[in-house]
Length: 128
Length: 407
Ligand SMILES: Cc1cc2nc3c(=O)[nH]c(=O)nc-3n(C[C@H](O)[C@H](O)[C@H](O)COP(=O)(O)OP(=O)(O)OC[C@H]3O[C@@H](n4cnc5c(N)ncnc54)[C@H](O)[C@@H]3O)c2cc1C
Ligand code: SF4
Image (cartoon, rainbow over all chains, first blue to last red; front, side, top):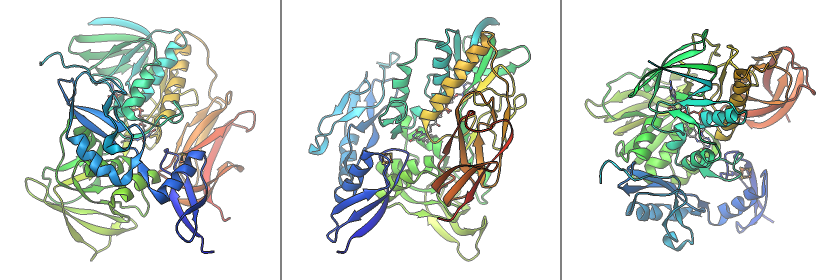
């Protein structure tokens, strides 16, 4: 059998375990070593099939004490959709006040993943 | 001048300062936070990326989420925002602070320093050429993009592969700025591998090791830079090439912020406040925690340090005796950074070290005692060492070293 071993770094958390992933001759996932927790195994499997990432960015706020509210996808979304997702996120704005955890975009690009606010932005009382 | 008095005064309300507030309140002591910005959070406010909180909250959060969620666990406290400390009188335990409402004289039983770190300025690199607009430190660029909604330019070169530079490479790319490449003078990366993967490789941004900028071009606005290969810190002649860009982002390190106090408390040669495991400085009623002690990779450890500092500061403010220093740690071979520097040898604690250069397999030793083996040790990744006074002799001078070992 022509098994192949690829090395990668788990990016699920800042510990950044060095993983060794074994694939079969068709590039299908067989096994992984080097992960300090089970999340690393899920990551390795996805990374060789359809890699996913959390997308953190920001959205314009109208009438807030800050011009932007930071947001992120609640769960990782496929890496290949990141720039399309950015386009959607950049095309919208929200009105203050914004609460942390508030859903800003539901089911972005049919991924079943919501984009949520990661901070609170209060209303700007000074200007209307 | 208004006069105030508190058991503990905390200087700086980032992750370490918030931890310190919680630590003080756990001892039923009174606390005042002094912060120069309009709110708590410090650098967390602009770190909108994920990667925070796995130890403290057991989930992966962004900086702003970590900030708000941690603050929700802290009881109400007194704070003065947009306030600057003018000076600290360590002998009388009094400090002077100023804000729009006036000048204050504040008496403290104990002081906690949690002022974080500042960025090493671009000028520290001493690169010849003009000084057009378009040159930013990475943290400043991050502030512009993430908090003020301004883009620094259209085509950027990043100098230095520290974490802030790597994170900004991704952030700028997502915002539509073309990131031409990251140039690192050392033969190895400056930031975490996870950031090289998810910030550069994910977006096909090249990382040029042993390469740096040797000249700046442009009159009013930056027009480009000359880069060259480096060997042992010197440019290799004949390898120069021109790179067109209108933006240069420098991510060349953080310096512990101790300007206000470094004439009065002991600091190490990297600028960090020297403390023992109770987070006490060389002045008995002054404590310190966070990036002003040693530059941390993970906010969770900053918070924990802050909590320790606050708790012990409150004990001292209330007149409790805390044990004196017994052991002193020195950097030995292969160690670039080490913290804490002293121990009372009474409680188990964590020591943080960074190795001098990458090692495939590093053996960490305390004098002649083997502590642990670390695979793939890199200066960019802080190593934790648990030290337990019931297991090791932690009195007197102790040399910590790291050496490459064969398998
Ligand atoms: C770009 C970047 C990315 C990071 N990414 C991660 C990550 O993915 N995961 C992770 O876990 N950690 C990460 N970290 C590390 C972690 O976030 C920091 O180490 C931590 O937040 C630092 O907290 P601090 O309280 O020591 O300092 P700061 O957050 O810098 O707080 C210091 C505070 O003191 C105030 N201050 C300073 N001087 C004075 C003064 N004289 N008077 C009054 N107030 C003053 C400042 O305004 C500030 O609010 C990152 C750090 C940076 C810089
Ligand atoms: S394997 Fe687990 S511990 Fe290691 S980096 Fe991935 S998530 Fe973190």
